[in-house]
Image (cartoon, rainbow, N blue to C red; front, side):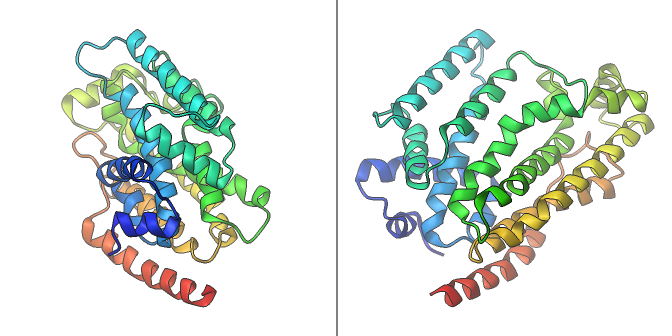
Length: 313
């Protein structure tokens, strides 16, 4: 399989320093985004570094917030985010940023004309995680997810390319970002609760008689409750509806990019299947798509991608 250097060559990314910057983001993607990374392997090599840069930056900032060093206060983390934003603004304006993740991101943004406002929205949602611990309803959660997830789909869209006007594909790309994040929220309820955050809409939980203390009880016992099961089942149905909203966007992508996104969609939606099969138990395990199944989905996608590349020359 083609290595990092060959991908960078294919993308026309030259200069030793910039290539090292992209390598940092690629390593972050490979280590933390196994499903996304596998799907990216289906893309034409020239398009992979940009996706690595976008994912690597997002993962790096997310980890600053979610995985603080021991003893670091939220105020100190806010200061780090201030520094990232200054660095990002400098880089997008053509200056030399300090962080390799920011330098790779800025280069990708210039190459693909990605609007800077998407990164501003992303940083705002990351900052919200320092102070906001729950969401009253889906509308309120959607405001957060615009910056944390929808804009990721919008950032990637210029890299993938479309066969329709980009504005027509944008709502589908945004919906797919939201669908992926909703799946994360459902899978990671326990981990998020450990950070004192609940990303499940409070009104949905209340309809089923669920509050934060009941969630904490499930976490302590590593066991399910019928009321929590009912709330999770409703939210899985909601998540599937968002995937249905996003799915027509696959046909709007350039042919060589479709297998990548179809693979990511199928694999990530498969996590919902695993949650349902476990009777919505998100307390005793972290649900993943088995490696064998990931390979079974990716193999035909790679074949479709190679055929598409051959047709387009």
